[in-house]
Image 1 (cartoon, rainbow, N blue to C red):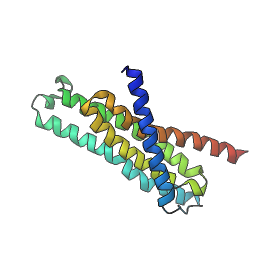
Image 2 (cartoon, rainbow, N blue to C red):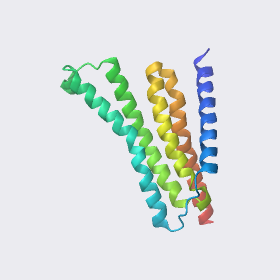
Image 3 (cartoon, one colour):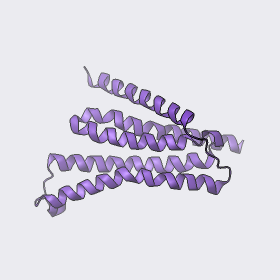
Image 4 (cartoon, rainbow, N blue to C red):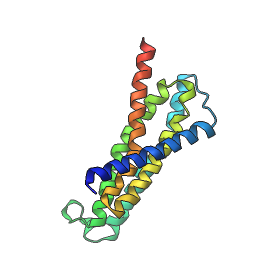
Length: 172
């Protein structure tokens, strides 16, 4: 199987996972009541604590790996082990994703119509699930990280797009 076929397969799997997750949240979670701007920003702020969890885990595992290996404690002068390089890659990617999720979540919560605010919960759940899948998949084989990446990334892109559309609609 070519790498492009594998990528397409992983993206399709991610989209299926996201469809199930978003449908479950839409039908099972109570609607969010937040008309006032401060209530919307508080919703985003409450959810951002969960966004920080995968980053905290990545940093903690990296610190532990450095602490546990006498050569890694030397910092930039040391040659990283394969496991340490994996932890650094996970943490770096998680930081990048966390910034995107944070910005898109705040923007979405600020401008989305009230009936759609429930999708803020779905975005955070997708991010957490995606980071877990990325971590596990990457350890098995680097290509397997793609499903987790896509599960966490695509909701942020959708939230940015929706936020822009809602903002343009409000300005019109």
